Image (cartoon, rainbow, N blue to C red; front, side, top):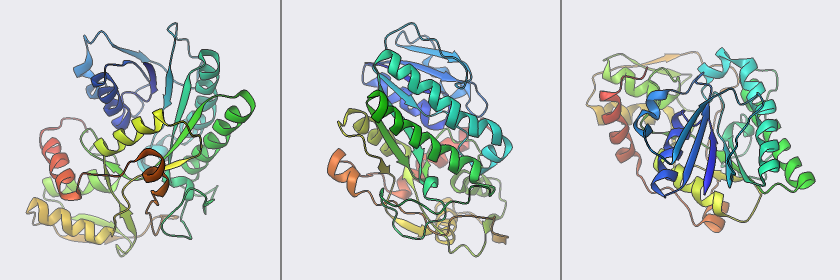
Length: 311
C-alpha cells in the first residue's frame, strides 16, 4: 500500500511511519513542523519507501502518486500547543480535514481520521462509549481543539455519506511513549521531565481527576487494524485501566526512585474530571486491546527521555 500520513513528523505520526514501513508499505509524510520535529523521522532518510513533504495541510495538496490510504493525524494535540496555536488548530480540523477528504475522493483512497477523547469534553458518563455525545464548552480554553475535532468527525461522515468515501474514525485516548516533547504539557512527559530534573511534580486540583494511559505501540497496532476494518463507525482506542492523577504521580516517583515532592496548583477551566474509554467496539471489531503494562511502558519512555534532545 501507499499511505499518506499528515502530521507524519509528530509523535504519533512518526511511529505510524515506522510501523507501516516495517510492514513493507510506502509512506508519504506531510507536516508543516509547527509541533512536529524532523528528528522524529531523521532515521528514515534514505529509505526508498519513504518521502517527506513539508507543507501546511490546510493548503492545496498535490500528490502525484496513487494513494491507498490517507491518515489525517495533523493537529496540535496538547493544551499548551493548541492554546498557543488556536487558529491553526481550528484550521487543521476544518480546512485540513476538507483538503485531505477531497484528496481521498480524488484518489479513491480509504481515509482514517485521528479524532480524540476530547470530543467527549468533561464527560457526564464514565467510561465513555462511542454513542455518548459529550459535554463540551465550545468557547472555553479547550474549545478550539474539542470543536475542531468534533467538526472534523462531522465532515468525515458527510464525505462518507455524500461522496461515498470509505472512512474510519479513531477516537484516541491518552497515549504516551518515546518522541513526546518534554515541554508537551501533558501529564506523562511533564512528570517524567520533572522527576529527571529533581523538580516537584505539579498536580492541578487535588489530583482526584482520572486518566488512562495507553502505550504508543499498542495504539499504532490499533490504528493498523482499524485501517483494515470494513466498518465506518467511530472506535475508541485507548487503555480502559483508569487511575487518578495523584496515583499516577506516586507511580512515577516510585518508578524513578525520585525524591521529588508533589505540589498542587489550581485546576484549569474545563479540565476533564474523568477519562476512560469503553473499548468494547475495538475488542469486538478489531480484536484489539492494549498489551503493554503501565510500568513497562513508563520504563521505555523514561529510558528515551534520559537520552532525548527534543525539547
